[in-house]
Image (cartoon, rainbow, N blue to C red; front, side, top):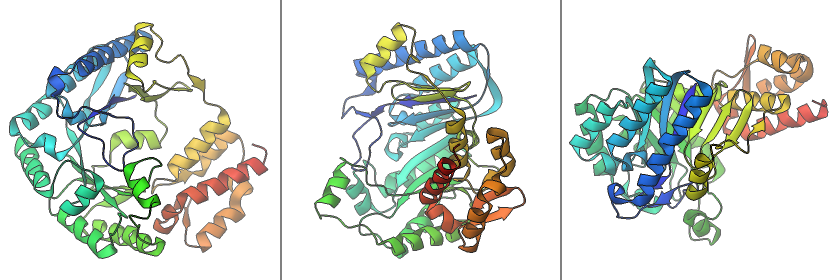
Length: 388
């Protein structure tokens, strides 16, 4: 089982962000009643699930947000101690934490996070250019990234991921590749490179809608993506999912669990869980979430995952990865033969350079990954036509 801990707090909301987060402003998390109540409720939510699930093995824990590194290391230590007490935290489990560079500027804090049990850091860098960081509303600067990485390496962190964004307003391919080169000089074990998505209602989307910003043209964004793949590969980072690249042995085990259909328990406001064929999402409202825990029913709105939903999710998530989808899994989930149902469609994708068939697996090429949403939507329409 995977465990995801959603930490909803951040210092301030970035201009592109549509995730559930609660800005604290300049106030210290240590003195925030809201943070204290969150911590107590999260530990009680863990207690509830331990009573229901028993001592299950946990292969991975991921602290996401929000900004988990905004909270002091004793929070992560307390959560991990409670997980290990109630479940069985596997030896060598991957323990990841999303972190902002500006929250890793004190070496003492970095040491404490690692001592608490964090063994993988996913740092939200987004850009190595201060002007673009300002545009995105990020609270750090390039110098903070350099200093944070220095502290992490000196403290013994050997699994560092850098999260970057491409396709930014005013950006071209040359600038994106220069950003990548700058980040790769830090020798990360993992890079996540996300194309900017303008989420409705965010400040960045409003600026774009009003004509105050323009995004790179589609052909320029395609060049950014494909040239970025080549540059990352030249530096030893293999692409293994649409936006994920890693050195050998450093694929994100937690994310791979999502993409391969593992059960996961999500804790905290807005966290989603999928366990034993059921799915639910904790309410994003902190007061209601705490009330649900007090009532012992954090999963009161759980829904069964139907065979059709399960098939669609396995197709969609597998086709995000470079390993692709195993055709035998289609048969096990549907009782039908994939090539009999979709052989002509597959061959059209292959001829168009969007996919490859390797034995019993269908995988999208880099060009196919660029249009994966359209490919998957087309496949879902075919399932409808087959009456599945």
